Image (cartoon, rainbow, N blue to C red; front, side):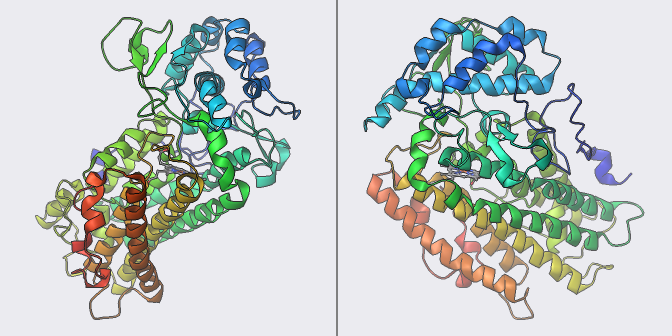
Length: 561
Ligand code: HEM
């Protein structure tokens, strides 16, 4: 047992997802299905829930038969009041079956969001603003959703993984697996039961991306194992070669994820996003919910963390958002990408509580194991990351420990680790930057989505998860580009010598250009929308001089936004 194992036990990542086992939560982490649920989502509910099923089938603006549904007529609210009993006791009878609890959580959360936001949809289709949503959830939705959310470890409001996206697909032909043409939605708000619709395309592209996350998980774990093995009393033959193989696995999986993301443009039309989006807004920071939402009949302790036990506490949750997907946060943590200390980054951290418990714990484990093991410093062959201005980072602490000789084997800081040849180390550095570049690629495309699907179509200032629409995505995109410049400079990419190869050079050239484009676009959108640029001003006003002359890029870090 090596030093890492002594402090951080290995994480239970599954190789066999045990799809028939109903005692485990639907969402675990595996090397085969990655962050997808262990089994394909449950579609059919037990007969006690027939009334719920009936309402959900009649609910979408366009139902499966093509007929207009309750949300088209604006009659969902009264239907919920007239037809649905409080089925909390029935939920409780099935509590031992966790995947079924997850299906019920999904279904009640669809109903809750549709019920609350129905009036906003009515106004939106008439060309008006959203106005106010309903802000009292009736007992026949509030109690059962609180119960199944509690049993599954979710918040009692629609989430990305447990409900809207990753637990909302079914296979048209069960024998044909997860092929793109074989996927359908289980639940939808607008036209999503039609697989050619923009709503279906939007959700299913997420699922198809996450389908590639098995190797991403396996690669991340292998990176951590390689790092730990170098500190073991009898290290395996070549920890660095193992690291390079693991980083290559991470890289190729991210390339597939990004290539699939690119299909969004044709699967879901930019002009149609804002109409089904009305139903996926959250409560937090949204003008539709100035006072939060009251969950009737639910003691406040089950929906909030406060100690107020009366039944009238209003609560708020962030909405469903891809920000709660686990793939990019996994790589953020694996590579210890520093985020600036800003209110925008606080939102990023807040998002991380809206995901399945095992995903959350896995991400924390990766971060901790990487930092405690000194993964970044070792991988890059740096004895000190003191040039990183984020002095709170524990990877720096670990690097200091390495310098103090408190571990047996270490890089000497000159890039001449005894058992390592320069070529293998150069390969690690190039791979590290290529993986960072995939994160940049994801976030850059994502910024383009935000521009084309949202910013050009609506002036509503907050995204579905309640983040400010103009500045939030650039906060993280700029942080990744900064990190790339910093790492490139720190490993000697800018100096004389052989460098890291033509491919990495091309990557860094693109980073330089994109960063300028981002700066201009954010500045323009802030101006157009009169957005308080307080949080972003340093960046917006910052020097536009070339990244290549930035003293190794270190001066290009965004200090405060
Ligand atoms: C038309 C397509 C898309 C649009 C318009 C869109 C929109 C947004 C917006 C506005 C945010 C800000 C957070 C918030 O909701 O408050 C966000 C965050 C995020 N979304 Fe999407 N999204 C799209 C597709 C995707 C896809 C396919 C994924 C794949 C998993 C994804 C993953 C993410 C992630 C990881 C974040 C957090 C970004 C970060 O950490 O910098 N999104 N999205």
